[in-house]
Length: 206
Image (cartoon, rainbow, N blue to C red):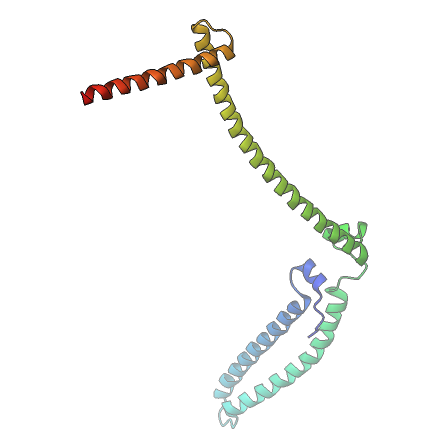
């Protein structure tokens, strides 16, 4: 059998030409063996009906095995030539023929140096992609943090709006004046609380 892998032919046929030839060889051997068995059985039956026959079934078996060996040797010799013709002329794709799926390579052929440059460019693009991906994740984290800050800022502005409305309700239109008034009222409340606590303490002692 041929040792040439013939991978391009296997791509086209879906099987290696050597596998095809091996199956043909095995199929013929099996068929030859079955035929010789049938011939042997027929000879044994025919000789059983012949009177005074000195040929025994063992002799018939030896003869059929010898004939089988002769036929196998002849077939092996012929099969070697047949295999060579099949692999060279029938199951062989000429080197100037491209399969349809490989036509693109003919239009866009690259040298080894060009292939290496293309490979390096792909690696650089992959690194850039990883860098861009990291930068995108950092931006998303920053945007999430900004959204939290904006939410807190809106709460603060809402609180200021409420303070301004309270100031307007009490006749103070300026926010600074409202804040001063609020601080003053807070201090008065703290003083009043302290006074009440002292009064309560003196009542308890008395």
